Image (cartoon, rainbow, N blue to C red; front, side):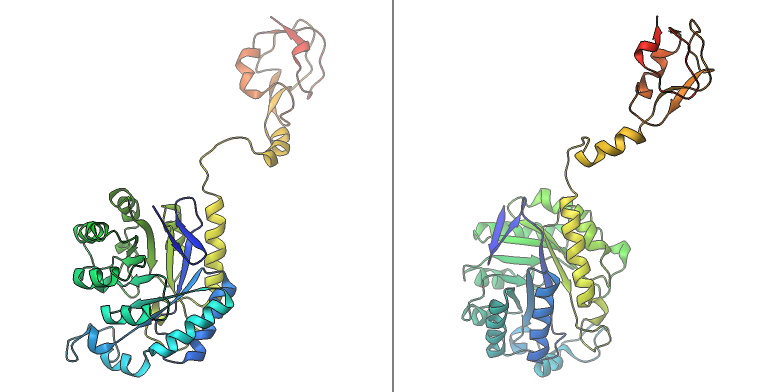
Length: 342
């Protein structure tokens, strides 16, 4: 299974698709949002992602919030959410600088609005993962969907997967933990392998909320083909996701590390060309360790193994012990096959 988003193919046999999640850390400042796009491009990310909020479509104004919010989310979004016109300008800017613009709609109506500006893929947040009516309506727009799976049971993931397969919508599922920041013991990265086995028609990725890079690297080694990571221009800058965001220096390190890990994940064990020169001196050969007289029996008293590895391989030591020297041999020389007989 693979997805195509802009210039990129995503799936087995293709490079990891790295999404810089700008979220609302721009605090409604379009200039900052553009700077985040440019920084993400320079860091090597494939895409930069924003969020499109229509608060009245998302939530009831008087709903209770968890205690990790300093102000009610509704009020925050009214103040800081980007408008559709700003999203359109952001997309045009991303197209111009050569990075894929992505956006998460937090309602079906938000998705329909984003469709009018030419969005190529929908990233669905964990909160909407079980919202089958909205997923059906968004899927009808005809674009691939990347769906996060935080706060969900494996049964809920399986249900959404089968639902989207029935709709014939190309999808990716990203393993995710909706803790901000998470407890590492709660991450359970092994679920990535389980998702790959249980959801063969989906690309499997990882959406990460840790404040560092380690679990993203681990996810790539486990087969995640999408990595999503929250970013900020400055960790000292206020923002709703600062505790789970990395800066652009760390984003560059993330991209660089993933690209190095990817080329390291081969399955063939052989002597590499650049190992040959090292092998010739680092391996051990059979050598004399004291002078040996002609006719003397070779034993652990007069031969042993030392570098370099250009003589009789040390692995043959037991086969050489007990043979007789054909001539006098000085100490500390490589033994050759002409030096002994049965």
